[in-house]
Length: 172
Image 1 (cartoon, helix red, strand yellow):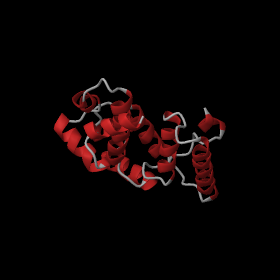
Image 2 (cartoon, one colour):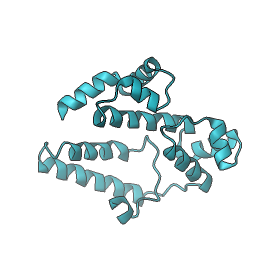
Image 3 (cartoon, helix red, strand yellow):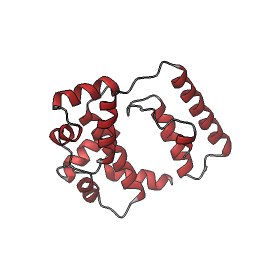
Image 4 (cartoon, helix red, strand yellow):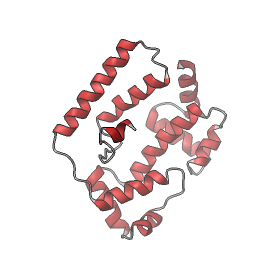
């Protein structure tokens, strides 16, 4: 609701945006119940406001209607098995048009975006649904098998899904 109140809901950032780490840090502070102290929380929030302010004073990136439509489709289908053909059919464009439009706007391909969002979703599932096995998380996110998921997760985060879960649950 705050995103909408500040009219940030029509702004699109790629997963590699400079604001993403600070947003993630703020979310971690909230999840931890501000255990790091109020001063730290205030500093993080202040840094977030500065970065957002800088982002909005810089020239805004124009998001084409097609790129927005592709991103919205991907966001709604994070846990689905999405092929390029499915995506192309959903937006009534050729696969090459889909890739070109998305990459021009967001700097990565739709596949890269979907993979990065699935890793973010996997992190949430591993922490907030600790009753799920790594195999079940891999299955929910449509990875071919648990081993591929574990290897891919480790290549992106530096730790295995099990190690990530243990560390985050221990830190909480």
